[in-house]
Length: 454
Image (cartoon, rainbow, N blue to C red; front, side, top):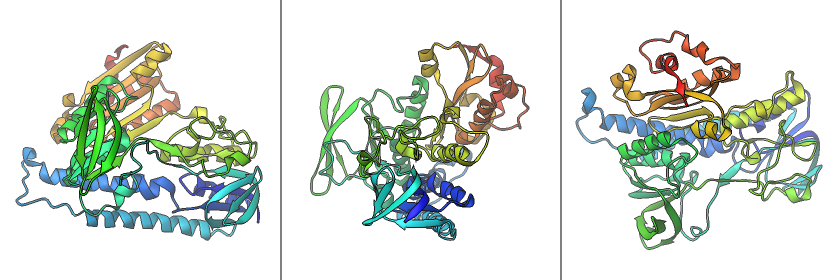
């Protein structure tokens, strides 16, 4: 029961790390208490983006008359078929991961929940295992605030198991999960209300970006109630009554279904961390250094549980960082990473690096270039003119500090900026490039010709 390395959790960082360790001749155990693939494969990216695709098809089918296309008859949403397609995609990914892990003679896949006995020993299914090195990749789960535990709420996980479309879906939380599911189920035919306690949607974004997100929700016929602090909910015979404070007034909503989209909490509470020297922060995330090593020299933490990113791409980059310190040169570090993410609403929002608020807080001298989507020919030709492109430049160095894009394909062409930031290139590199016409991204060089002081 002794291994060179034990990986706890088979999310996005665990399997590639197991494969690399095995490739270098290490005897590896990878432990998973649930399905292989973690959040992304099972209840995150794969299933939700499959649903987003179905919702997009439904929207286009019902809303193309302005472009001269009309469908005679009713657009019918078959949620059971949508779910079946999603389930098939998940099963394909799970099977691929299982084959990868079980076909390798240096990897032992152990099913069960792991708990540390001490710094060098874990217990799974009443059996103890030891290893020279440990890699924690246990992820996170939905956080449910007080006042909702007595009602049949949904999470981003359980809502994907519905086979009938909700009559009225009330969503608590106006973050990425709430926005994606809100627009999605409105397009499926549900009435949707989003309750957000903040003064704007996506509170970390600049005011103009949040205003555009609100415009998209409004255009999607999703009702958004800002400054709505939810108190709790009660279940009645055929509905859930949600109580909330909005502008100092207590109000109630009747919902057929309630989705809690109130953030995530790390899966570190049942891991036996107290039996080790590993330090958690006040929110339960594992503290790590720039190489993702914990306070115990032979234990690392990767993925959502370290609080350094809540995305599949950051989890995979965590693997790359750790793998470089184990086997490669040059070494990679957490501090090398530019934060980047997207909200997969329609049109999507994508961001990398700093925004205006971040720049002003740091007191940097900066310039900004921006262009509304309504001034871009390709967007007008597609009939999708909501959004804007916005890029920030450091005045002293001419390097790009960040960008926020909203518009069709924004989640793809944001990488034009991401790549330049990793290259440390001057914004002039993009400004002087020749892009293909007619595209939306062809306006990125043009807009950079007119940067103004922030």
